[in-house]
Amino acid sequence: MSKPILCIGSYAENPYHIEKIGRNVYCIEELCYCIVKNAFLLDEESFGPSLFDWIEEECSLHRLSDELRSMYSKRCSMAALAGTILDYVGYNTRKEVDKTEEILRGNAGMDVYQKKLARANFLLKNGRYAMAFREYEFLLANTPDIDKKLRAKIEHNEGVMYARLFLFEKAAERFLKAYEDSGDKESYYQYLSAVRMNLSNKEYVSFIADSDEAYEASMTIEGRMKEAEELYAASDDNHTLGTLSVYKAEGKMHEYYEQVGELTDKMKYTYRELVKDRVK
Image 1 (cartoon, rainbow, N blue to C red):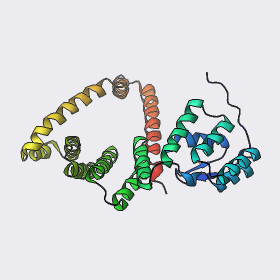
Image 2 (spheres, one colour):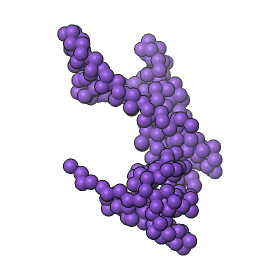
Image 3 (cartoon, rainbow, N blue to C red):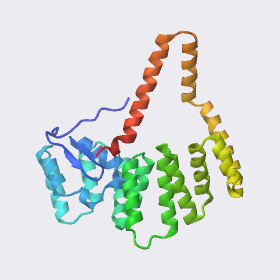
Image 4 (tube, rainbow, N blue to C red):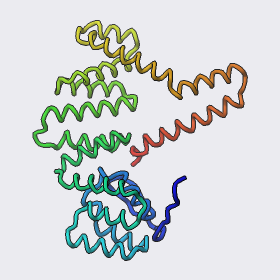
């Protein structure tokens, strides 16, 4: 059992909006949680007078806000400011605080384009696709003299996001562009996989028959598909579906609908987490 955490300060009547991550927080512990979990997304603008005022006025933490204002006037780094907040509150572990400060120090040494790339990759990794798309598209449109390797990496990652959203036609377009810009075979494999998912079996066979390159790559794709099928066969999800089939076949409808309800709730939660960043 985890040890209890003693909260400090007041629960805010008016939340603080962290613009970089699009979240409202209502207490200092929630702020600490968001800082640690979203360190890659934060920058100097995230730690300024409006935050210090909120900490004082809404959380009633006058000493902390005074210390932060003093540090800010001395141009202390955002890593130092964040570290002061985290240390004062004591919500996070020492390891989490040190890691957060390390990330923020790294952010400070990046130019705007490097920051946006790091943020986009972080957002992609955490399934926040709408925000990641915005960062990637900004980079493609605004990075001066962007080299082909970086462009291809961004295009490939956009393909990954489209594929995860089941938009296979768009995914194929991005993967193909990435392959054309980089020559990376992995992008081509992903392109062909997206094409396979978007076409019927007959259309796909016809497609690969027209290209020696596609036919050879399809052998690799089929091997990967077989491996994925074997992994799925051993997965909890497949076991759950098998159990549902047994319940239904045996007429155990109470157990069947109970299991369906649990599975549906899980899928709803996953879907809400996936699309929440798309809500403006």
